[in-house]
Each structure stands twice: as structure tokens, then as C-alpha cells.
Length: 331
Image (tube, rainbow, N blue to C red; front, side):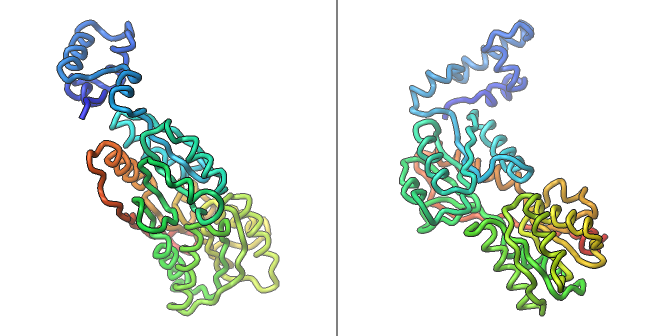
């Protein structure tokens, strides 16, 4: 395997940034360090010329990632994990968004072909449109939280169902009996599994299903769902939102309506974004290691890209942890 900028940096006992500065003729690097880096690079056969290296091995040194919405705390953490894995292998990360639209997802996949060495793809809605046909690209692909049939690809998933069961069971054990749900976009991989977890907890632990209000994973949609729930003649005594943004939006609507959280209604979310800890009150939620999810998916993809014999596709699951906070009467 060809030496990378990080290999040279480690051997020369400098940072990767310093190696980059040496080959970009930065005058801030002192002569002694410059000479040491050049000698190490020559000995290791490191070539700083990306074009020459790409032509010699047929690679672009770029990895693509396609996400439903490449912004917000959840996706920022996922990208951070991916980017760290990619940087360590001396690659670059190209980012595209599908905006929860299968046709946009298919277009993004096709546009990445020939520009990247492999793809990490998160497509919560994959069963319609041209997307399945676009997956026939001759390109290594690792999926995250996506419905992939036939075992053709590696898949990294969160414990969506188990996490939802855990948090809803927690609210029932705290004495809540009727639990409303704020869902996400129809057909979403995450939402379908979290709803199954909600239903399992209600069935196994004696809770009652309250109103089900559709959201779109944004705080605004959670706020609007909270307004609808607040206006019900018979309000539930708990709400499970399928992500933290919607849970935080719903709590704001309840506060504006004079409904006390958690005294009159408990609220829980999913993901444990940073904002959940600082919400008013702090939000009970399901923590998933999003950064680690991104990092592991990136490392698996790069292993596929660099391996002479690609490994057999596997499914991986990252664990969850319940974070009990004041929104459900916790500490």
C-alpha cells in the first residue's frame, strides 16, 4: 500500500499539516524540518502529486457520502466520524444530500460515479423511484440506516427498535399510561423501526397508544405537532418523538400552551443531540454513538476500497443508551 501523508508525518515526527506545508513550499517550515520530511517521504516512496497518484492506481483519493439532509447536529456528528476515518487514509470527503427524495438520491449516486473511490450512503427511503437501479454502479458502497435487500452491501444500523422500546417502557414505568407519538417522514427506515419499538413497549408493559402526529424530523414540525396534541380534548400524559428536534419543538409548544413538562406531560426523544441536554427541561432521549457510526462506516468503506479481495458484506449494529433527564421526571 502506498505511503500516505500521515505515514510520512508519523515517521518524521511532525504533523500532517507540516508535511503538506513542506510540499507546498511554505516558507514557515524551518529548513531542518523540511529536509527531514523530504528524506522520509523519499525513503517511503510518498508522492504528493495527487493527479499522478490517481493516474497510476486508478483512484481518485476521494470518498463520497450521500445523506438525507447534510446539516444539523446528527448529520454533523456522522460526517465528523466519516471525515476522521477518511483523513487517516489520506482521502477527501465529498458530500451530497438527497433531501429524503429517492430520485434525488439516485441522481446523487450517479453523479458521484467516476469522481469517488467509494460511497457511504444513508437513504431512509429506498423502495421507490429509480434508486434501486442506481445501486448497480461498479463502486464500493457501505450503507448506514438504510433498507438494503439481498445482502449485497455492508450495512451499519442503530438500535432503532430496541432504543424506542427502552424509552417508552421507561415512561410507562414512571406511571405514564397514554403515550402519543410524533413520527417522521412516511417510509423512513428509522421511523418504521422506532414505531415498532413503541408498539412493542405498549404491548408488553400495558401502555395505551395515544395520538399519532406526523412530523418531518425538524423542530418546526415538532412544534406544530405539539400544538395539535395540546389542543386535544383528551391529552395523553406522555409523548415519544422519533427524534430530538421534534421533541424539543413539542416541549416549546406545550410551554406556550401552559402545559407543564413533565408534571402534566412527559416528553422523550431519540438521538441525544447536544441540544437535548440544554433543552428546558433537559430532554430524556436515546443516545446513539453517531460519531462512532460514521467512523466505523468510513473505515469499512476504505477497507473495501483498498483490499485486493473485498470482504463479504456484513451487517453491523451500534448499541444505544437511555439518557433519563428532567423531561420525564428524571434527575
